[in-house]
Structure formats: structure tokens, C-alpha cells
Amino acid sequence: MLFYVYVDWTTEPTPRPFYVGKGKWSRVQELERNEYHTNISKKYGFRREVIVETTIEQVTLDYEVELIAQLKTQHGLPGHWGANFTSGGDGVCNPSPLVRKKQSDASKQRFRDPLEVEKIMVKTRGKKRTKAARQKMRDAKLGITKSDETKQRMRDSQIRRFQDPAERAKCTHIYTDEERRRIGDATRSRPSPNVGRKYSEETKQKNRETQLKRFQDPTERAKCGNASRGKPGTMRGRKLSEETRQRMRAGQLRRFGK
Image 1 (cartoon, rainbow, N blue to C red):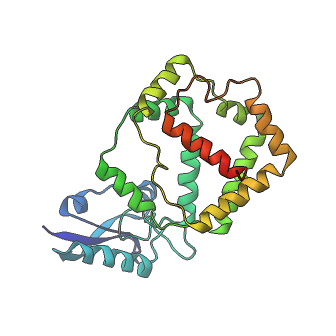
Image 2: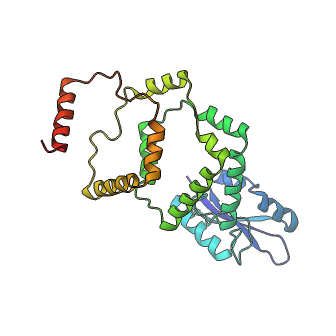
Image 3: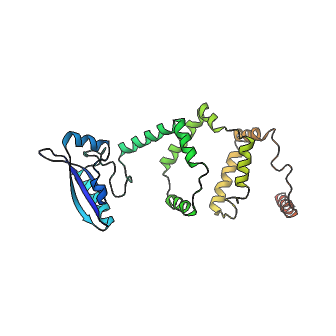
């Protein structure tokens, strides 16, 4: 199988490169790309030149990145003129700030439309991912750490969101009996994700300090009291085994030093 790298030039008296691409021969034969590519082609003319032909795909990926940087065809970057939306190499892997902004605005607009949200929910509802797909998703996120600046932006965004009464109302969902039944059926036989999980001493200490800090705050204590007031206890009507009772008894004795 052959792979190609090609450059699109204008047909002006002094031709200018405005797009670098890669792919199989079928991709080379497809003339249309994006809106900017179309506009430049109409205004200044269009000629495609194949630069590289090879059986090794990685060679075309690397050369595409090199040519985009050399010919300055990435749209939205200072000093660049062209119709490449990324730096090349592997699809939309490194879009320019302008492209990122457009993608972000388009995504926000999409999720403000109730019809679009409903379409997505219908498409994904009840869909079960394979074990291999879940593992891929896990591997993709593994080891990624967010900077303090990113964490602060996320925190600020959530605070602003929940200060808005309309947004808070969206998050306050009262489940119907049917929804409760479905959730119960789905989770009843599923083991807790924390079963058998071992926490480091550092993590335990962090959790302990967070809880102590939380319950030293009168406002937080009042929230917990108001949340449970008037509701039946979660243990009411629940039958515990003799072994569980014995463990609870031993825990209370240890707690009170008896």
C-alpha cells in the first residue's frame, strides 16, 4: 500500500503553498477540503503537487508536520497563511488557538440546543462498551495530571454554575419510582468500586483532614443536618448478619476504649 504527501499551490504568477496533506491515492484525488481551502482555491486558483510516495505511513506523517511548519500553512498562527487547521502528523491532534476557539464555541452551541442533546442521549442511552474499549479509554487518561491553573479554572466554572439558580434547578432531579427501580436493578449485582481498594497512608491522612475541616465548619454541619432531617434512616428495616453485628459491636467497643 502506498502513502503520499502532497502540497496545494495557488496558480498566481508567483504560486504560494496553502495546504499540505497526506494519505492514500484516493485522498489525493479528492479535491475538496475545508471552507478556507475552498475560498483560496476559488480566489487564487489551485494546483496539487505530490511530494512524497512511500510504503511507510509514518514517513508521510512526519514529513507532513515538517512541511506545514516549513511552508507556514497552518491557519490561525502568526505569520502563517493557509488552510491546514492542525500542525499535521495525525489528524486533529494539535489545532491552532483559533481552531480550538471555534471548536469550543460550536460544541457549546450544540449542547445548548435541547434537540441536539436529546439526539445524543438517544444514541448513547443503554450503549455498553466492550472491555477493550473501556481499557483504551482508561489508558488514554492514565497519567494525565491537570495543572493548578486548570484545576482553578474548573473550580471557578463550577462555582459560577451553581450560583445560578437555573443551573442548580437542572441538577436537582427528583427520581420517579420507575427510575429508582431501574437504577436499583442495574447496580444491585454490581460490586462497589471501592471493595478491596487499598489507600496509601498519605491518601488516608488527606481524607481524614478534609472530613475534620468540613465538620469543624458550622455551615457544613448544618447542611448535613438539614439534608437528613425528616428522612428515614438508611439502615431502617435492614437485616444484618450476626457477623456484621459482631464487627459493629467490636468497633464501638474499640471506639470507647472498652
